[in-house]
Amino acid sequence: MKLRFIQWNIKHNSDPVLIAKFIQQHVEEFCIVQLQEVTTSHFRTIANLLEAQSSAHSLTLRPKGKFEGKNRELGVATFVFGGELTKVDLLHRSVFPERTLISELEIENTPLRILNFHSLTGVGYRHAKSSNFSSIADYLHAFPVDIFSCDANEPNIDALDIEDMVFFDNGDKGKCASLVFGRDKVHELNDVWRTHTHATGLFLNLESQELPISYAINSKLLKRYDFIYAAKHFQPIAINYLYNTSILASSDHAMVVADLLLV
Figure 1 (cartoon, one colour):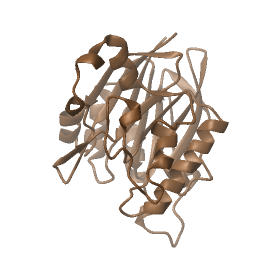
Figure 2 (figure 1 turned 30 degrees about the vertical axis):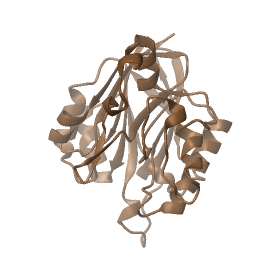
Figure 3 (figure 1 turned 180 degrees about the horizontal axis):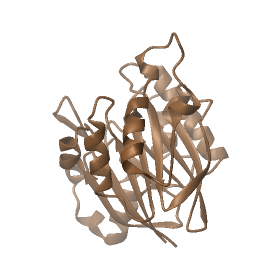
Figure 4 (figure 1 turned 90 degrees about the horizontal axis):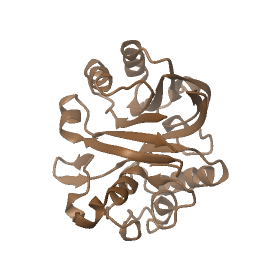
């Protein structure tokens, strides 16, 4: 089975109609779409336009409380084409559970468990960010998933070799982020871009400055903050970071499109 997996932080104040139209351009028969910074109103608009076979929004499971601020209005959403969600839940031990979504689903008689999450930013939640990564690492270690995707707000310095990645010091010298993404990772999943680049031999000819870009801090500092990690039984056959066209679609992050072959 060939599965298309789409990861995208759509930006909370984006145009949901443009967002849905851009997603529609990339959806295939068997496809999973995971979005971050999805408000309730955006989810309703996007879900109506996409008409996926199955969808879930984290804010349905954990709505904003009466006295909670705008920072509790950002959820994550998962859409499934060519299959059905069978169970959804939040990572309740995380700092912001509504920025996580654990989904069990079935596509072509294949059961899958996937995780969608949006990291906190170190600017506003320095120690909370590291604690959140610890909770995510605990979950991935105890309850393995087939695929996870996220806006990680990491790393500080990306690198071709996972051993050379440097993470922000959120009071932990980057250790907690490394449990999820780096040399200290506590799960068996791998960055599909890195896996595909190694497999095709392109890795040997790349320079570090040629790494994909998914976000620009203050429109200047280029980062790869958006990731898809998959288990070894998924072989990446094509990976694209669609930065420029995603910005035209009103987001500030690249849509990441991965074609994965179940082997």
